[in-house]
Length: 194
Image (cartoon, rainbow, N blue to C red; front, side, top):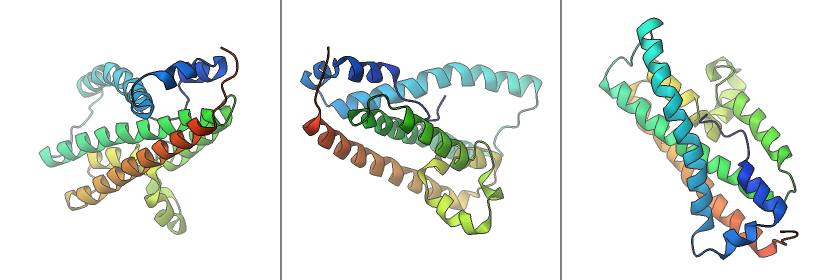
């Protein structure tokens, strides 16, 4: 539920019906509103599902906890940053609706990028050596690979700060890009219907 591979159906409907004009008239920060929606959309279902799954996996399937408190704290921070990163990517996807009618193309492209480059399908260390440098710089790695590998102990504590800083840089960069995209999109938005 954390991964950003679809567009918010309510925002998509607002764009289709023209009711996005009401959103633009409200005296609030539209980017912050949509980012908060994405954050809530990622956080609430994840918490509702993950706590029972962790309990069942620990009790019946031998899920091992992180090796020490440092790994547990690193994993928790990396997971929190992964949710923020996912929300920033989701907000960019939603903002793409200012230029497209349906947004399915953006959703399909982001789904492919997330599945391939986050480490969800294929562990990133299994990619060829020539691709490792590029993959390590992409934001998608911070969605699954970094939290999972910190939890499993594959990333040593000495590298936590670097990994968490890279996630944070991507979050800030994508938020700045999202605000810029919103300001450009609102200037040229033509509302039809509604």
